[in-house]
Figure 1: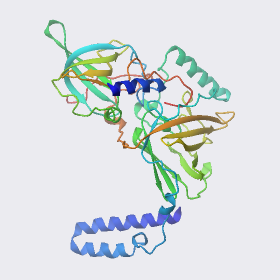
Figure 2: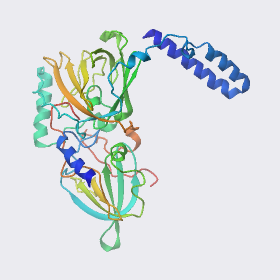
Figure 3: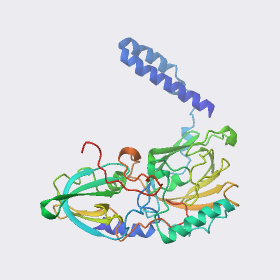
Figure 4: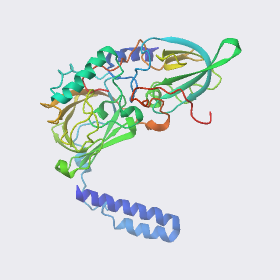
Length: 279
Length: 137
């Protein structure tokens, strides 16, 4: 990973130098040319940095739409039984389920309505598509909703210990291929995020394991296991399916552009009919 | 028409909130109402599109109504764009009303001045509010 990072960093410096030099006129262009000649990535004599190996990976190109609106080739598997939870979280989850029966929809009250993005793994099953980019030593997931991305190192890097991670919404991920299945492990997810609908919060011990594979040419399946002993008394796995759209592209998503749905002062769902200033 | 049929089928698989980021509890989801009016503004914005409609009221006064819709990315993949609606267009708009009685809701489909109807949601109440424990949102 470090070697790659250094070569990319060098390339970036060269590009930056070229741009700056470009602003200063002809003399700068000569300097940029000289720098380009010394860049390892620019030389055809350098060994392949790993792009040839990418051809052996399965074809995950295109954009993948979660099955809630899409029609994947295979129907979703039956939902799993309820999660086995510690008493504190069982109470929270049971309350969520009960409220869902009496007032459907009212439960979906969270900071997400105020444009704070969901964390992993809820971020992977939004009603908007995702895309996978394969580059040497890395898989990048572009998540349309909230314009998020995930960086999954596949270069053999170990998952750092929890106390070495700075928490983030999508956490820190490493992955490896088992045949045509990408196995991804993630830790370092912000504790205020939701690991499962109906459960708010978790500890810094939350670890997500995802097994991603094609189950037919245009259906991707991701089995997601959540482990956090403070929340789940045993790991809990759900499975999501995605339909391929080769002609789609990931679009921009800026939640704060025109959000009328922020929570009210009591934390309840609200809906503003105020028009934007100046109208 | 085919598109509408596909969307209806899609509703079968729906198990999530219609909107990516908030509850649908403020709307009477699935209870279709219809209103005729004139487009005042069409906002092709995230996280939701908006239709501001001017509707004749009693005594010659006009009322303003506001309707939220699916996002530009969602609608854009289903035939809508920023030019779909223009200020001054007279339209028929089908929507799920706000529960609190204010003049607004979530739009389901819109019939344009040329008689063409564009579907913005599967309709029939789908997609339903989330009830599953699958982690889908």
